[in-house]
Length: 202
Image 1 (cartoon, rainbow, N blue to C red):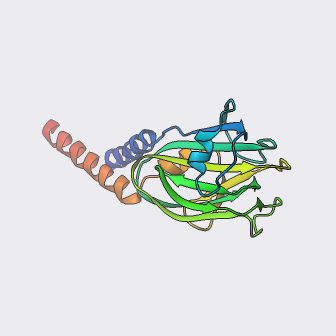
Image 2: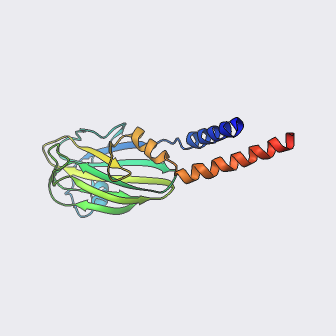
Image 3: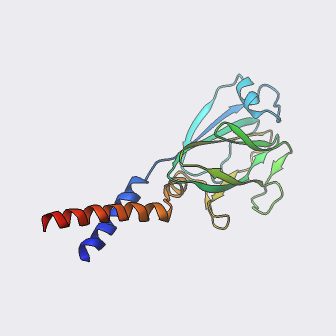
């Protein structure tokens, strides 16, 4: 019985260690020198002629991108199993914002957004119930600000109840969660293999 227990522990350890994967948050900002079309942030971004400032960030929390800027935050990560994720964006975005998932526009706002550091504010952009399959995913968040450089933040949830800061560490951990059924099946397989070997030795 001790051997079976140790095999189960080893199986869980193997599964959990194999689910550790990295996520990367990058933030690109540039000055607005061409008029913003807030119905098409992708074109608005590429149409600018200003230099791009590139920053790798750990956490998007109270981040000031500057006056008269258009911004693109990109998040790359790998999902171990399917899940439903939601995002809340608290932005200072005078021209609005757009949220893309795997190159597809999921949600956009064209009004002047200022969340005033209050997650209950009507200017918070809610992007809920996004089904993410196992595999690689890319989130892209565009927003543009004329003034007055208020700090922006974002958070996410994987269960619709508990929210976490949008950070590389939190995303990597959430994306690494394996469904209990997957762990159970893997464990049973290892147990069966172990018992077969024990029988052969005896």
